[in-house]
Length: 238
Image 1 (cartoon, rainbow, N blue to C red):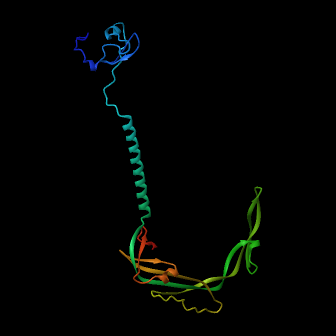
Image 2: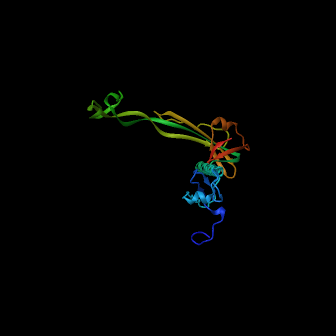
Image 3: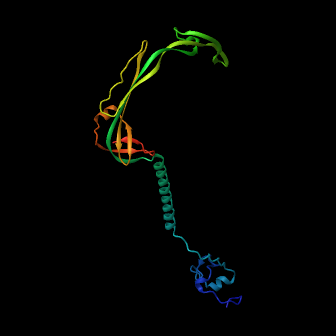
């Protein structure tokens, strides 16, 4: 019986104790000090210290705890990488599609220019010699040492070559040609442009502009691989 009238605790459930003679801590099941051999009753009779038994809780293995943290970190990194890859795929949306060349298109244009009188503005030292001055006004040109420097701003009329019309020729064959150029008095030929495109058939019909050299080398029925963007347009042809 214990002093309070209860049943004695089993030896393996008794708290650890410290010997008052040598200060060594012994297990609760020990009847003698494991260092000096003093019986527990004698060591405890004059107030030997009894240590509080720790709460019974499963202790995690240090190695297991470290591996758990490592695995958690790896899983987090993998999740972040997966999310980033998904974002890039959704943003870029590129995919590859097998396509067949089914047609060709071309367009050529020529600008026709003529002299026209246009009104412009410039600083007085930038006005063309052939210009006809309409008005001048004095205004700040720049500042020097926080003080404004004034110059004259000039409005003037001048003859310029401007595009008055654009001639165009287009077709869906393999023989591109320039449009017939018929100039009126005072006109001249301006900028020329040409564009070439192929018609492709894959899961759907597509059209893609290509350089003239590539366009000339391609053949109807040729099979290739097209890189499509998120909108379904062909971004690259291989």
